[in-house]
Image (cartoon, rainbow, N blue to C red; front, top):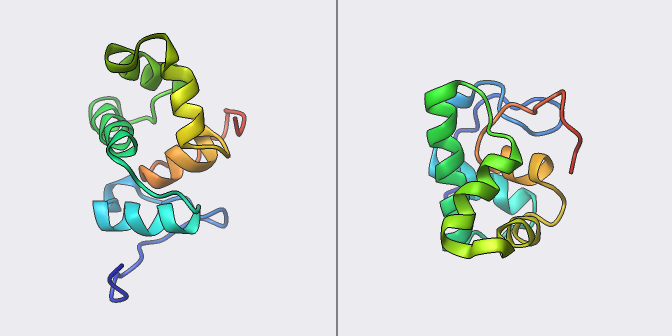
Amino acid sequence: MDVTLNLPALDEEGYLVEPGDWNEDLAEYLAQTENVKLTDDHWDVIRFMREYYDEHQIAPDARYVIKHLSGRLGTDARNVLFKMFAYGYVKQACKIAGMKRPRAWSTG
């Protein structure tokens, strides 16, 4: 990781204050803070989440990500998603993808 990364504003839980400040270098940094090693599957999820956010201006609910993954992974998509982000979709996937913390959702 490039130590010259200028971190944008994060809230007290480490989520981006402004999702528009996100970039892939920041995702790598945030993944490290969550002890997540990003694989191609992680990037598939993260990029889907970013595209969804760009279109709808909200973070996608986990069920949309699972539906996206099921096209490639079939019925195991839910299990794969929650193995990739072992501490929860909101806690890790949303944070790494640069979403604001979805306040109305559980941490699962």
